[in-house]
Image (cartoon, rainbow, N blue to C red):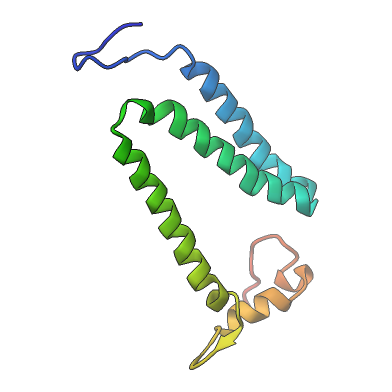
Length: 127
């Protein structure tokens, strides 16, 4: 392997292979939800996202050559993110709360069938 100006490896033989894997996973995550099967959508949305994140972290962020505290800081950051999500998600997912109400346009859009949204063509009729 060749070394760059700073003594680090600048060439990694698997970059193209990893890029190809990431590209295939991207295509699966785009076309998987088109099957309209809930479990497939969840797997492609979250499962593949975790796999892609792992591949990027492992192969492109070079954490194996960083000081150990960098890995701990990343783990703590993810833990704080999970704590934040756990703290706010119960309030965000409710329709109303103590002193607030979800805006009516969001509530009505969720309740209307697809035909009420203009047939799903993305254009509203103007009179």
